[in-house]
Image 1 (tube, rainbow, N blue to C red):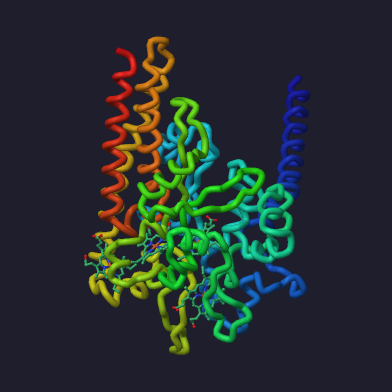
Image 2 (cartoon, rainbow, N blue to C red; image 1 turned 45 degrees about the vertical axis):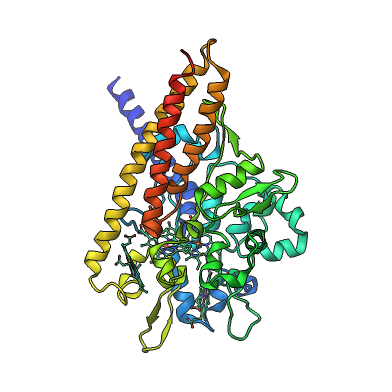
Length: 422
Ligand code: HEC
Ligand code: HEC
Ligand code: HEC
Ligand code: HEC
């Protein structure tokens, strides 16, 4: 009996050991090989869309750009991809029924743009998704046609994109000076829709606005055309007015039945009219500062990250006390985040309250419709702040104004919901 047990224990032990070995060979090792390091391509596959292609000609710019593969947290932002839905549970109520409901992670640097799209748990629209992730996109559009590539199955298009956002997305590789250029048609189209032209803006911000702007897809499935909702202006209310004018919703909220919208990273819009923008600064002033290499030559640092990681280069020429400046930034961010969370919790309560009263057969449909409209508006204003990636810093006054507006709309939504059943 004791011998049997001993034999059994021995056998189980051996099996476990074998299983661990297989796991190591079959799972752990390949995953190690696929760790998010910059992959090393062979010389044959290296094209101009690969950042490393430019290493020889622009060593400092390229080496600094490759640092976007680093990950580090800051108080409010940074590039560690934590799950926002866990940190801010009210977002699960806000985004119910939409892709962001089950996956909304903090963003990382440009070198991760493709990988993070592949691992995102959200549904994908089509080839167009690669428009803001891959430096291969313009060439693929030239080859297959805008509409054809934008409506191509996402997975089929994924097989054709290998290079994340890179030099040629912002620079003309044919020009002698490596001049700045725009490669995404939707930006100029949006500027023209405002009755303005590209030269009215600074290229040192426009190169970023190609992707760091709010957008939607026109003709989902048949056209998938990216449009920036700028026809009325750059503020949150202006974007909402644009959507109201064309009667557009991203989805119908399953709890309130309201047509709602999902905002995405309106960094360029939010920055307009800020203290720093009025002072003449562009995105590049803080995110691509001039620095000096070991040989004493100055170059443009391309480490696109939180500028709090390099304040000497980005802020010191105007703010001499860096510790005080950092704490000013963090105070703005913490205050605004606290206010926004408060509104988010109130909005979640209002959404659930509207869900409950709608079940009542005595519900007054006119008042329900009024509450649904307020849900759409309150959620849009709050989301504008939540998904702008500077946690309010880019325009603190605007951040306060937008959150305040969201609070008022949420209060009105709650009051209206109380009137649904008398
Ligand atoms: C005055 C300096 C300044 C200017 C100008 C500026 N930014 Fe920022 N940006 C910051 C700071 C500071 C943060 C906050 C970083 C943090 O929370 O760690 C930030 C955050 C960001 C983030 C998120 C980074 C992260 O770590 O999560 C993005 C993306 C970004 N900015 C893009 C832009 C774009 C696009 C523009 C131009 C429209 C712009 N910025 C203009 C200073 C600036
Ligand atoms: C997201 C847009 C963007 C990407 C990607 C980008 N750059 Fe730039 N680059 C800029 C901006 C903006 C400037 C600043 C131009 C100015 O100040 O007038 C700049 C400046 C430069 C300059 C001229 C200033 C200097 O440092 O001598 C060079 C050269 C350069 N970049 C090379 C590169 C290389 C190489 C890559 C890829 C490894 C790259 N850039 C990726 C936007 C970008
Ligand atoms: C072709 C599209 C594209 C262009 C152009 C572009 N970005 Fe980005 N940027 C992205 C994407 C996509 C991400 C998120 C990548 C991820 O999470 O994997 C990102 C991430 C970032 C981040 C890091 C955010 C974080 O949380 O760590 C910063 C900072 C940033 N971009 C700044 C800029 C600035 C400044 C410019 C203009 C000089 C610019 N970007 C131009 C697409 C673009
Ligand atoms: C070209 C000059 C310049 C640069 C560069 C600059 N700032 Fe400013 N900043 C200003 C001016 C001017 C003001 C308005 C006066 C004030 O509040 O100090 C300001 C205001 C601020 C404020 C208060 C904003 C508000 O809305 O209350 C913060 C915080 C700040 N800057 C942080 C930064 C950080 C961080 C950087 C670098 C990433 C930076 N600044 C780069 C000029 C600059």
